[in-house]
Image (spheres, rainbow, N blue to C red):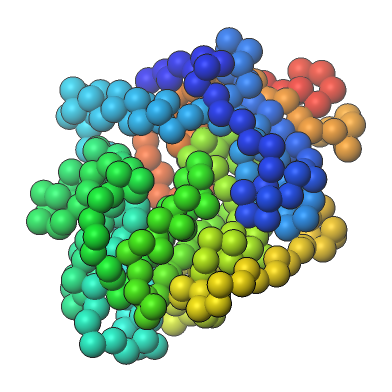
Length: 343
């Protein structure tokens, strides 16, 4: 399946979405066969946040989701990998168990933004939570609805409920949002003074192993602890604690998880900075596995085709459990200088 991208499909960002700094450094640019720069990766020189300074628009992604859904229906393809869903259930169960054990509440209502096929909602429900979900991808959300879950199938911006929740969860969702500030502020509309907001995202140095992330369309942001805290603070949330609900499990423990509450004070908290050494460490991670002629310059990568909404270019047809396993059968070759071709 080939997804065409035109110049008019591209959106651009010039400032860090977490701390609003305009002091940023370009890491890489990716081009499709039509020589359109469809994905550019930039790092903030203040808080170390990595974000896509060029990326297809939300409307492009929504159309791509629809094209993929229709094609999957046509060929009878099941987009759910049982191993991935088992892992999703276990992850949500660990989170729900942590919330149950550490935060006692008279009621236990949860709004899960980015609920996908509802496997995580199953885990929350099994733990006694009253659950509701939001997800824009019809090919995933319909599975949750068929299970009997209450799910808004659409973008969070169109979620019109006036309900307030004891817990709001963003579990590996915030990194996908093109405007994360909007979503964190909208979450306030569904929170009481006692609501706890659980946010979990991939941690940049745990997730980014090499150059492959420069092609990863699915993630608009790669957070570190400072950048996530800065973003939440600017949006009206204050940090309760950084947690790791997986310590007593066999699940991957490298994710970044924080619990926030509505900020009581009207005054904004001060924003933190990341050390230059840490920022350089993040930036250089994107160049692992490729030679660079000019070590202080960004790289340009042209792909054979854009055939996957998440991975950008995928060289294998089957769906692997781990995102890094999906990079199999990609080859990168140097054209000249810091320019490369991936097929």
